[in-house]
Length: 448
Ligand code: NDP
Image (cartoon, rainbow, N blue to C red; front, side):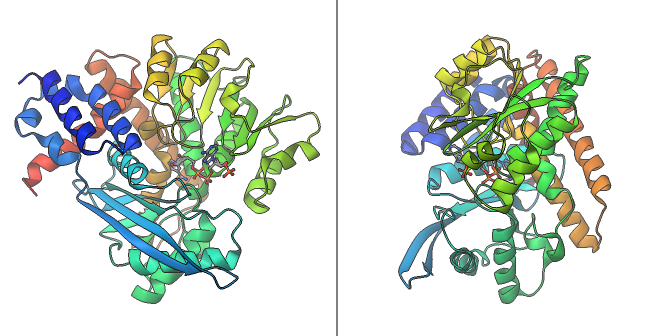
């Protein structure tokens, strides 16, 4: 059968079977579109119908999370863990606590994670988990009770050699601390069970910074490969959470001017460059809304209830670091009109397929999340190595290793794209390179 027909038929099956899982179908479509040239050169994977195995998670766990709020009311949420693929190692991927979480979002994130983890060249498989619990507006005691109840169930399925969760949207070191505490109570102290831990609990220096720094390192390697640099580049970042804050910090350190950032209520444009210490104080320390920023920085403007990609202003680099599908066709058109030349994804799948097509048609260099935001999981794997050896590396050691891994991922994506005659197409490069290792590992292990 022709590879194209194989992929078309399989995609049709996916659409029919999972019709209601929109994000999952989107992730599969992007992946299928990209790997056709690889399958044509390697027909064994079509002969074995390997993709049909790959698209079904090895295990999908859904569970009830009962908890009590401060007023004594009984509450309940749904918890998930998708153990997608362990061909390369134990499942590894974050936990997301956000009201939009559902099976489709969990599956798309876990599917992406398989190839992201593969690209790091480390021995980790792909997984993801979370809950539709909304930490916003909850007291510290409510967060703790929720995390404890969530872990009472999740702990049955995880462990340092089986499945190692970390953070994601709504799960920062506070939540990780409570999750880890409950795991320890039930299973004794095993520091390698969760990553992104606070330092006192065996966390790694530079893990907090890793995803944001990693995105900027990736862009920096891209620019360097073209004899350019971040110096004086104008950048806009969406989000003001973990990934966004450290992307802003590193971009500024490397000489860029970061003009704006956002949260789910609106966005800020600061013509003098975002004051990242102030941003951290508002969002990380005080957990307030971004609108507080303009009360201190009066030269900045705040626009409520709009997304930052609607902003009409000239800039060079867009770093979407908030959430999936934040850039659709309209936003992509605006980016093009604004003169953007690079879009690098700090978030997972923030650009939808129509927008992606438009960006590519307009020769905008697009760096997909599975490559550009792999720094977080890479440093998580370094945290596991430190835990296993009972060591603590210095910030510099971890940071140098992170930069090295991002360079290797960039080179792999660039070389792979070139090998398949898709020069500068990092979507093709990242998907093929990520898939190749997983596919080979699946084949060697036989039908399991
Ligand atoms: P955080 O929870 O720390 O921050 C998320 C930010 O995005 C917040 O500013 C939030 O606004 C904003 N946001 C969330 N949902 C929406 C929405 N629907 N519309 C507009 N803004 C929104 O999460 P992270 O920074 O950890 O994660 C951000 C992205 O990066 C996610 O896609 C995640 O999967 C991805 N990622 C994260 C990694 C990590 O190590 N943390 C690793 C790799 C990828 P508000 O403050 O109002 O909630």
